[in-house]
Image (cartoon, rainbow, N blue to C red; front, side, top):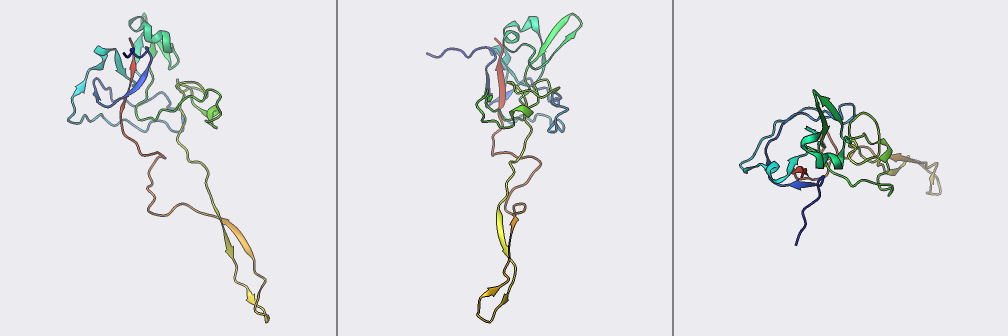
Length: 195
């Protein structure tokens, strides 16, 4: 027997989700790795799933009215931002479109740059659940020895040989290069349980 996942659970979903806004992620507009623009969703021949009738919705950063989604608001509050429109108080759900998820470090020391993460509202740095970390490559060089030519002495041994250590440069082909550092991946929709 399986129990239902708790409200606020996020999971990958392998089907097409409807509705999809297609709006650019504007939460971390101040981050060095801000969204560069929206690419309209292009549903494949797979059927569209209307998950909201089952208590799930796409993690697309939309604002929800607190009174309409009290259970979800009780779990995430205004962690991802809030606003007031007219007489309605709204809170924002996470926007995980196009991102990899990483387990929160919680003091384990596995995320060495944890203090440099962008908070879930995109306004400050904060090491909290929902924070963003920009892509990066770990510094990586190897030294190799360069031997300068030397004169041969009358005894047949090299005289005046000098060795200099130099770092390697950028990798050569067949390395794939692009505008971001990433691992091999498969696109899924991240959905959040709201009731």
